[in-house]
Length: 350
Image (cartoon, rainbow, N blue to C red; front, side, top):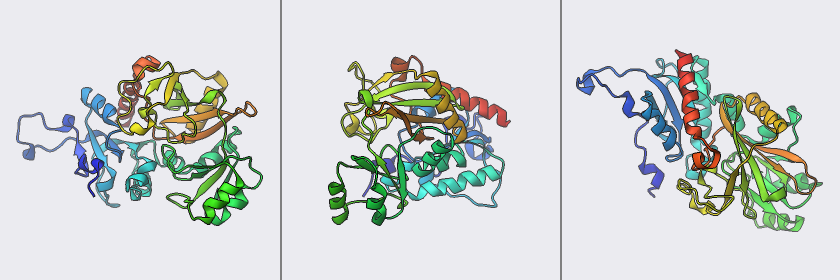
């Protein structure tokens, strides 16, 4: 079967237009200049905005498409100064799961060779493990959802004992809420297990957690850049939605349609979002999370439990897709801020 995303990338490393020779000589006779930046990615549409901004600034960069990439351990020096990791943990849902742990190996390979990697192996290890994320939150003394980590469906019922229903079974390797299942009662959980309908996800590891009713019907996501606060938004939920990709949210809280939304997964149409600045203590906690996880560019989500009013941090994302139509919603374009950050990292790398 030919998939839409397979038609968009056909080579392993695609030089951007700004890397092409400008001397007027035939391309074959000109030695290509070393790129300033390489972007490692898998999803064909999520990064069009940053690619366009890099080209507008005439930054020499390469696109490294993970499904068709390989590397030689004893190979020559990379053809770029800095690597920007944009690999998605949800690649397994697009039949590209092999690229997840391959990317981790490649990031570690580059770091061992002294290459500056933005959102490197430490950040990516947290990206691909919800279990590790909650362990990090625990180590920082931050409130998180009560969680039990399992590696077999035979452990589900025992792990759920003592938790308040509804509960959710959350795959360890996630990405945009993929694979999360809610159970409203012990009986419903038992029926799913008896019917063989429960999967633990790509790596056969999952978290059993309480389903938290969101006070006000929204969750809050905070984006960070260079370990510092960038902006916050409230995402108004529609019932039992888990599959959240901020680039795909379609309306402001006031009902105004966001022009650039819904381009990737239109099933999220109807979710509403509004700009929001969290209190200083929450911003401080989120910056601690990002820095401790080694995340250069990312977003952290939290929720206020309607049952007790407590704030719980629950999702750490090293792959951050900025909210759609950001200038209208939050007053500036975060893609420009990201490009500024990338330029500074290139400068530091020499």
